[in-house]
Length: 153
Image 1 (cartoon, one colour):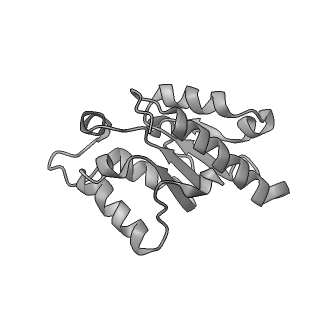
Image 2 (tube, rainbow, N blue to C red):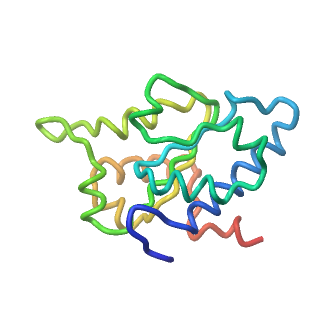
């Protein structure tokens, strides 16, 4: 995995693949309300946008930070975390005073009406009790894909 600071080219490519797949599945039902992308880093927003060749796709998909996505919902949300070390994870987390609630994560997860897809480094994310709990839930529901074999087909 290519480890970059506050952006990840591989995740940006994978977001593009996911968006093209979602658009193909939804076909004529694909609208501006179908899919959105949330990432904590503005640099990752630029990386993702630079990987999308389809002008109509980029017009219909909101790609933004958690803060700027607040108040919006989409059927499917893709979270591109681009976090590959604990220091980045600590900068990303927005915990309340007693560290029991991760506000940004809560907002990001609540933007999806039907499905959320999370891209990130399990090893680092698992060091956070909040992300670890989400990973466990996803695994329990058989929604976890490791090493993203689906992108290599």
